[in-house]
Amino acid sequence: MDLTQAYNYDSFVAEKIERWLNFSASPALGLPAPDFELQTLDAETTRLSAVWRSAAYTIIEFGSLT
Amino acid sequence: MAVSSLDGLAARLRDQKVAAVFVYTHEAHPGEHYPHHTSFEQKLAHAREFQRRFKVQRPILVDSLEGTCHRAYGSMPNMCWIMDRAGRPVYKADWTDAASVERAVLDLFARADRRRDTRLPSAAFKVELLESRPRDQVAFMKGLEVAGPKAVAEFKAWALR
Image (cartoon, rainbow over all chains, first blue to last red; front, side):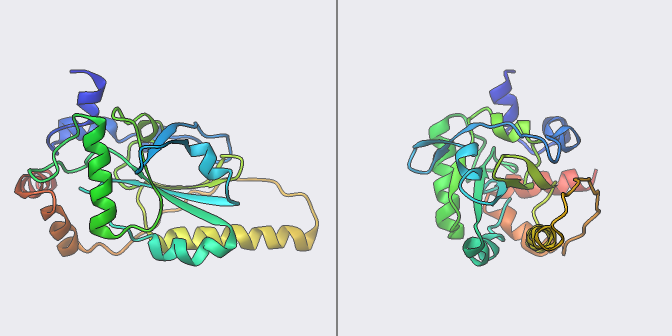
């Protein structure tokens, strides 16, 4: 199974979800965080850095409909 | 499942130069109505539906199909980060709680005021804090029903294991 398929798991079962829960290895506080390309709902390309440069602080919530 | 609990806070903080965005990830609880993503177009469509259904006011940014951004930040289903203008995290939480985020933002501004008042250079240090949030299981299960019966059944089975 490739990465894209594994990340987009089809069932909420332990063996498919728990491998992704890796908050303890997430970027450290106070150090530059990784920047990524993202798409707006109008399918325009932007970057996370474009967002955080626009304000003194930026709140970033991650999630999905389900 | 992420309900747009931060929209009110984001609106209140807009005048204080605080931005807020929502990054759309994989489906945490895929079900009959909103299955797992097999294309970016489908993921984009789910993100648009999320905005419509929950009337999300913050900009929604959609991660790549393989979750490049989400995975790099720890892949938690509803985590929350606050970044400074230089892209340094100043707060990170493995779950989103509006009250916790608000306390963090207010504290950031209070510290900035203190720095101005004392005129002394500041030295950063890290704090770990165990927070808690109200857990409304009825509302959570109702939210899962949006995904479909499969999502409800799988979550119940997972919770009982």
